[in-house]
Length: 239
Image (cartoon, rainbow, N blue to C red; front, top):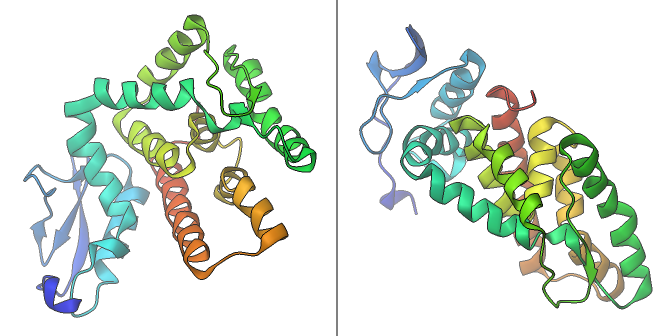
């Protein structure tokens, strides 16, 4: 409800060049993160995207319509303080990655999963020498210590902005592999969404989809698109 949102209090949104990047100005006043830190973005194009979200606000400010700004805040505030914890959470996804768990029945679903998911696991192996095992059914499969250590080393190389984007993509898709592929530009947002929702698509094809499920998938697609834009603007498509 608009009554619970702060009213727009500014008229002009501009950028200011700083020593370490670009800040967003609201009527000439520098924007800060929710925690009060200076909001300085290292890449101009990313700062411009944040500014565009602030310009697009109407009478009331709705932060739910500002996904890029929220990810920037995460990169500037949360990631530096909780980097080890964030990486540990991502490794848990890696241990039980969506792409590693295939259906045992029906065969048509299992075949589709193998055809569409295995190429990303093969890419992970060829690109980073990280092998993740797959299985049929829901019984957990243990990934090797070497693979998890290699994933950890890869995540440790990411800067705060890339890690923020990878974390968001992982939680949206349930797959660290998909998030890393999105980060490097191996796949685009639409393909990441399609692969992450393969099971839901299969079920809908055979038994139909309800309005609640469709709304959820629409939200995921929109958020994943914003994450992909964030990673691209922040330089996330470079390895």
